[in-house]
Image (cartoon, rainbow, N blue to C red):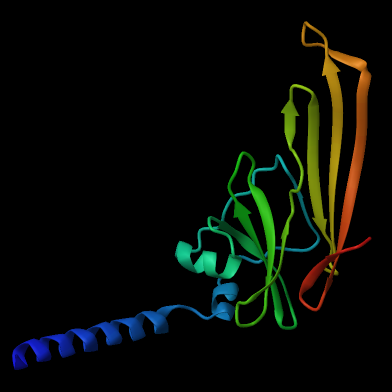
Length: 182
């Protein structure tokens, strides 16, 4: 009985010690952010642009913790302003979607903004492209240009049905949050 008790006690001590070591080796948010490649402002991107993820060596669980995204890759650190840090992550999909995430100094997510918010590319009856700009004051403009149309029985666009447009949305950065300007 004493041997079993000692074995359980020893196992618990090893488990607690290993857990404490793992916690101490995980970087703080500020260490994590400082290790990311720095991006410059103004920053511009288009939905068809190939953005290459940064190889940082950070575990996916750590990236998920600080990005709030279940699957994401790091693109780079965009800004550090007072107690806030803006990082661009790449979210995989049909097109890679850049996502701007703002964290406080402890790593808590304050704001998240998808920089690609519309359809990109061509389909049977539409064509579209979106683009985003982040200015030096951290404000963001996301624009979507589109063309909607119908086709004839030979798949040619019926020009008289074509409707072109562009919609832009602006966001201001205040107190760690992005708010849409109306």
